[in-house]
Length: 337
Image (cartoon, rainbow, N blue to C red; front, side, top):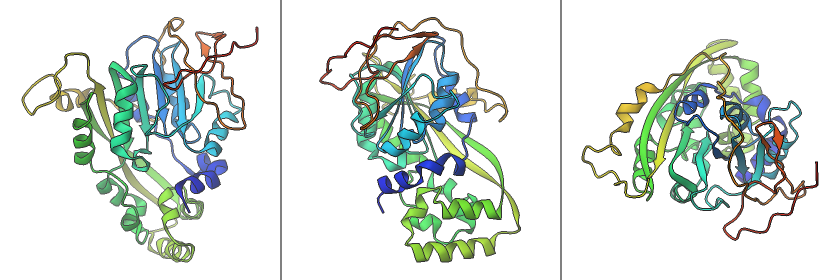
């Protein structure tokens, strides 16, 4: 089963099987300017983090959410709770972002960078970020993965999952990408609790794509062993994740060269400024006016509406789709309001 097949199969139940962490989204907010921004959430899935991020962005901001799975994006579009308002779904590969060069203030990737060709994705992100823009990678390292409830008790979980990047590998890849500099890192610890039955449902539903790497018979046997290994019908543990922040170099800004320079020091200087906050605290929204941003165009999801209207500062934008490819296709006018 390919990863595309996996996510297409689990799209309808994906959000019910996953936990969404608010703390890294609040941390990202500490790096953003108090003005409207234009951003992209890459590998968005059903838009769990896209919606949280959109609520945090200053009023008037524009946000697109991209994924290679049309089924996952359809769930974002089908959201009926109103939280997806202002998030434009975009069918696109992380390594080939169809945006103009230097058009975005931020690019985010939550728990998905291990699915990408890392070097090509970083190069694509560097191309579309404006000078001074920022890239946020929220992920789990192999070491953190081994300390999860799955890494500790599920047979073969860490052995099957070989796609995760270590912190050192991520930082090295960023430093080798032209136009990007490391700005900060922070480790989050999330207390978790669950029941054996819910954990069983998550494994059977393959809530981590790692489970799709198991042959069916091996997965069934591993689930039985996992349940037998658990210390009780209710379990608690601590999950860890890593947030890496990279900045897009401004014209004339030197790349890190190992010497002490503003570009090479922020990992130590900025990390203490990231505060996790309370899990129940809603992301803070900043005041802002109407975005003075020229709307871009994007390829719509196949079989779905190709016109996307953005909600900007409380009024409907009479433009076309939000983001465009490098060929910049013409943007048909929206019907009159």
